[in-house]
Length: 254
Image (cartoon, rainbow, N blue to C red):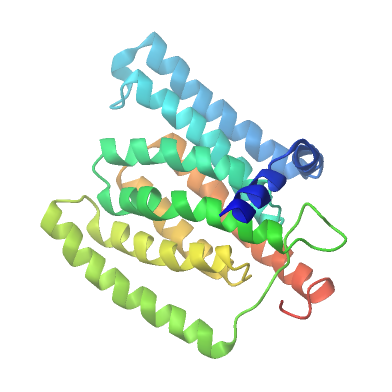
């Protein structure tokens, strides 16, 4: 236990904060543009909620929660797409505030995914990624790849899980049950693959982001629709980056 505490302390010390600064400096121009768009839309929603409290179905406090989630969320996915360990600091904040939003709107499947799975996994993944740093690029973790059989197994688990979760969500009165159920099922597999540093996580992130975009079109929310659309763009970029890292730097699949 002491070794685990010391390791976690090591990955969050001042020296590692330098990697956070470096991570921001590595952002591409289009990523900065996407961040600016997200800040504008989320900030506009807050402004409208202050000026006219009846302009949204969300109370002001939840609109502010949305703003925090939007900013932390996109920074997290930008860093993760680069295999950057700093993503987990922003992921943890995003998980908490996003869960509040989901609970308020009774999107129970994804809420359970965030609270019972994503939150503890964030810290476990943070530890694992830091333990397998790239020898040259210390702010990044090593990329691994799945075998064909492992990919087929993951797909079968997702389909079975989605069917089971749908039945449960219908019983407890969840909204958009099919979309919510498969977001939950795919999300579990994707985050496990992310935790163990497999590049194939992004195949599933792309699918779940498409589902999430559809869900926020049905349950319309401009802030989260924008956020999930940006997630989808970054998931495509992520699989390109992780594949490149795996081929050029981490060929041994360690």
